[in-house]
Image (cartoon, rainbow, N blue to C red):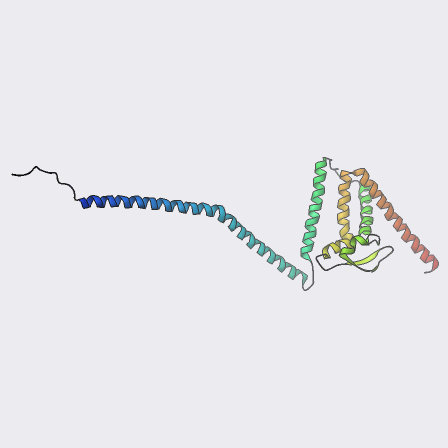
Length: 233
């Protein structure tokens, strides 16, 4: 007598294998997702942090090239002479900032610019610039202002001194400016020109005084020359 018929079941080993395969697939999917997230994070971090670093490195390279170019230019230009080209660039930049500040002040004041300068104003400005430039750069009475940047050499004309710029501690450029009436006149003329736009009456009064002083100096020199001629000295 036969027993009841039974439905054949798959071997237990096959189910175990399929279950292990599914687990492995899930683990692989999770590992791939984690790898993708890590790569994305590194890319994001590199974009946020690496870009500034790359920009800094580029700036450093450009700065090194610029410094090398300036050194070569200074060496080829000076030809074994000491010429403070870097100091001159600094002076130019300072003058540019100075005039820009005056221009901004004039713009903020809202005063209209004249269509053209009057000939009388040009002549008055020239005389005032001449006298004030020499007063600041050559006069004996203003030598304390120049003393930190200059060295006394001797007298030069009536009530004027001959001084040389100090070459130590980066004072040479300031010393050259303070002892050069031609250099000083650029700053003085710019200041007087801006003053005429901002405070025309007061500036013209000051320029008139300086022009009168220049005329008086010319008369003093002329009188001294006539006295020397008359006395035979």
